[in-house]
Length: 442
Image (cartoon, rainbow, N blue to C red; front, side):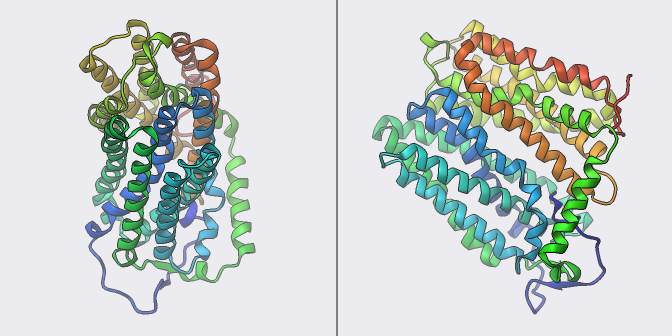
């Protein structure tokens, strides 16, 4: 949920995006495709780009630094989310983001053929990140405005399933395809095909959504707001967020929660690809695709569901230490793989299944902490967006520096370092009162 719908007080009457109220579209005609389109560019930037750069011979520290910085678009999206209410049509704003993102992904394929391919690729992926983060805001706005509370709950599973289907398609199908094409056509041609496919799929989804997306109602007060009024509301949102007692301790907790994960998410897949004589496991692009796209995705979904039920059963306060340990289970898995250097692909796949299960299980902790501790009061959705922005900022920070740390330490000692990085948040959790942002000794 974005800050889009809490940046101003609600009013009872609404106006539609179009003059005539259209017939209500069934959610299954647009919810799955909308969230597939939300996930594809996100995973293209966050995961696929790193694998492409690895195949192109870019050093780990540069891959981690530049793909990490691209994540800043999602960290700061709350700052421009209220201004999107000025768009005359949410539907066309979503379509524009999808088409722009698709065009930029397709242009990456062209950039790979040019001498300055690296700089051009990073610039195009930055545009993809901006279009995708903006798309998140407006897409969530359409979902909330088009469905009542019962429908929102009923179709939440479809929402999450198709966002994660984008991950399955990216890390599974496209990565496997890239590996096969690398053998047949060469690295550059292989990734050219992959990014053309990504761009074409986004363009097709955009064209489909011109008619498939509902024309959502807009609040009458919001429709007449000025930039100055929305800016004033945004200032009040930020002021009240930082006025909370103990807010800086809570922000530090959110940032440190993903300290290990931010580094593992960057370096882990590169470790799988690197040669054994430099400490990696020597897997091919296709093998990484098979492992993450099948076992990894299933384990992540299972972990996410189990983590939610576990926390609901035990309560967030009592579950938090277990969630933090689970979140850092991937760090122990990669340390084991760097020590044992197994050659059996099923064994590696099993270990990575444990990694992804732990990540899915533990990630519930930080999301619920933001919801229950920071997102309350008048600007609930806006404060949630700010909280998740800080979460993403911490992720970007640790991801950006991870390559330099790994280059200095080597893989084995790097994974020891990442294990140590999990200790501060576990200690800090004992001083955080769940249900209030004020830190306290337990």
